[in-house]
Amino acid sequence: MKKYYSILSSVFFIMTTVPLLAGLTKSGNFLYVALLEVSIFFPLILGVIGLIFALIGVKGGVKVSLVLVNGVGIALSLVVIFIALYGFQQP
Image (cartoon, rainbow, N blue to C red; front, side):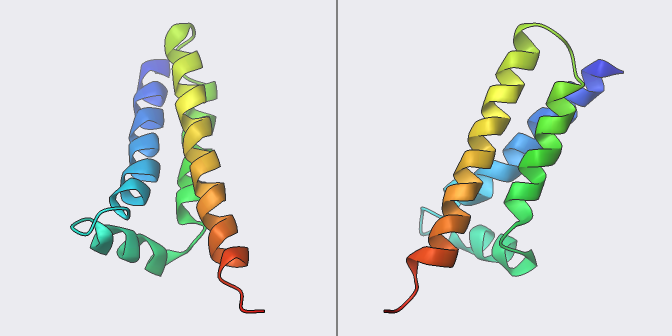
């Protein structure tokens, strides 16, 4: 059962980071816009769910790796949210 949690954690990491990284390219911009139409906090929520699954998943090096990559996904989402909320304000 813990193996499935680890697999779900990696799926949530992919769902968190791929749309954000695809938004940096012209061809993947539609994926990023579609994600933000749901909510600006949606990638953050996916990252937190992935982190929870990583913490209850398989022990050992896999667990450490999944916790680290999901932490990076959460940090990336927080940076995007910070830029969106405070970076585009007009003086």
